[in-house]
Image (cartoon, rainbow, N blue to C red; front, side, top):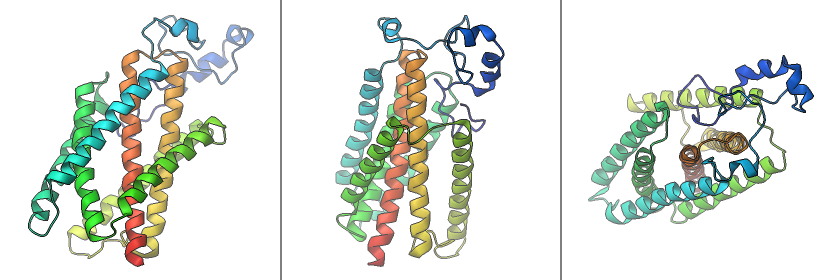
Amino acid sequence: MKSSNPIFSRRGFERDDSRADVTMRQPGLAAAGHRPTDLVNPYLTNGAPSPVTDAARTGSGAMTIDDVVVRTATTLGTVAVAAVVSWVLLPVDEANIGRSYGIAVGAALVAFVLSLVQTFRHRPSPPLILGYAALEGVFLGVISSVTSTYISPGVVVQAVLGTFAVSAGVLIAYRMRWIRVTRRFYGFVLAAATGFLILMVVDLLFSAFGAGHGLGFDSGALGVVFGIAGILLGACFLALDFKQIEDGLAYGAPREESWIAAFGLTLTLVWIYLEALRLLSILNSDN
């Protein structure tokens, strides 16, 4: 499944739904045991539709689940280490909060640019992905420190645990097939994400031009609803990530594409953590 919007596209090992009708029009494929919903393998030059078996994958240079786990652990580990270092080295007391916050915002902007560069590339770049992870970690460290210092000392731990809980829940639901990632599901998530980001941008613009708390997404009942919606949207993105990893494994994606899997999972988990941190901050401040 592809998105025309490069921001939401996980490039590298998605299956192209536009080719589904080709499979459906070939009787020989149905006779070979392929369901009409099976899609052509985009990694085989001869157009063979069958998924890659474990035996064929061994020694072929194809992506494995171990590759995905190792690359994801490396990327998330980079985020975590950078967050801890920035928490320690960029204090947020009254004398230093301006400087620390400025560095964090600058790191976030550069991380966003790196993520865009990687998104538009046809091949994964480990330096770009790890650079994004390090800079995103700097931003998360400062934001987490500010939230812990000025709102609630335990909110960061709660947000981390909440992120793990959401991730585990989505993984279980996906493995049990309670969540089915279809073309319609993908379209719904893309539309919801676009609307969500538009609201965020409008909220920032209102805040920047003197409208106080913007549209009110940072406090009160509206803020809680918006925070829950953000977490649910992140959970939907996580399901899309799992689907694309599953497709990559089944269709013999090159081993280097495991970096794309790590990149996509990191983007999603950072999203969920930030939304959980924001939601918990609102709930704690209301109390």
